[in-house]
Image (cartoon, rainbow, N blue to C red; front, side, top):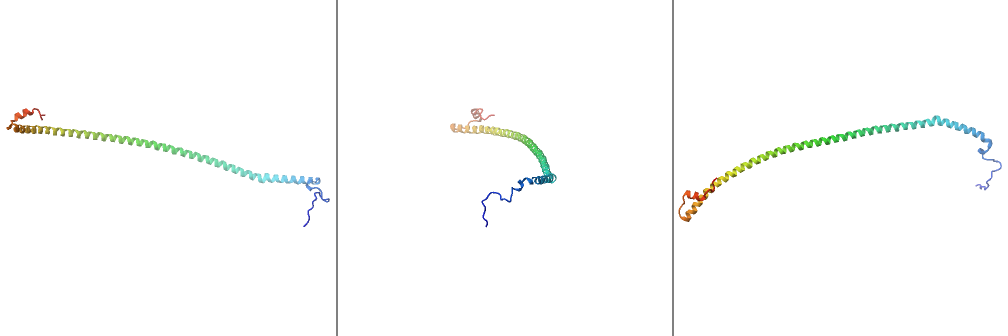
Length: 177
């Protein structure tokens, strides 16, 4: 293995770094110009048009996507508005149907109620007539019973049966109608 040298100076047979030597500047400038022109031509004719077309395609695709999204949003908004309108119309129809059904049933109930009230009044009148007839029969029977009872009491008390006129006079208007 070779031993490293601790020297920092340039050996005698070597000069300065070649790109820094003045005699090499014209050739370096020539190749720099040739390289720059060649690189510029390659970039302007091949790479930049491709990059430009890619960017244009992307921009067009993004624009188309945005336009499609806006059309879909408009269609969605229109569909949502139509849905809300149909829902409001359905609610209105339901309210109308419920209201008409309620009115119809109320009218039917009123007719039935009037019919039942009429039947009830008729039954009450018939019952009142029956009660009046029963009371009249009962009052007639009361007079007969009172007459028989009065005659029986008088016969027990005095020992003889009273005459019918005497009992009628004693009872007065009881049971007469």
